[in-house]
Length: 175
Image (cartoon, rainbow, N blue to C red):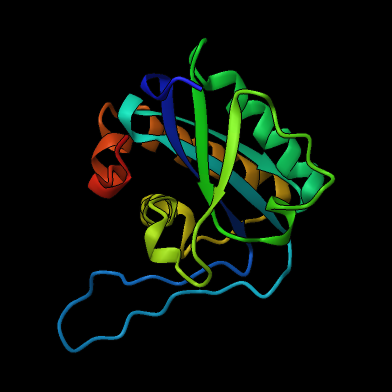
């Protein structure tokens, strides 16, 4: 493997749905605004990966979080890696990331992050940004509404040049 032709990718997934997260809202000092929180259980998952050096990313909205969905996501990341390059994909240690059932594409190597260290993965900041855009404090009326909102928010984030590079670059992860 030629070290001059390596791309560093970060990968993670996030659940989005009717029992979503609450976030802070602006309000007049001394007031406590009410925010409706749903109690239904429809949800989906965003599988996302970013390469800060190239300001590139890919995301899939998938109905479950398991090794089958992870395989689909790895295949998608593999398509985004430049020809002749090899991607090192850093990710947490979820069981579906390291199962023998995965068929790792030839142009990808998986590298687990230390246990219990989400602060090392910049994809966590991407999820915070997506929730800030629209995904938190939102009442979804259907599964399709959840999927459409996820797509819209990912595309809003992804389409702004420099967003991935600015938010996800880590000096200690440069090759």
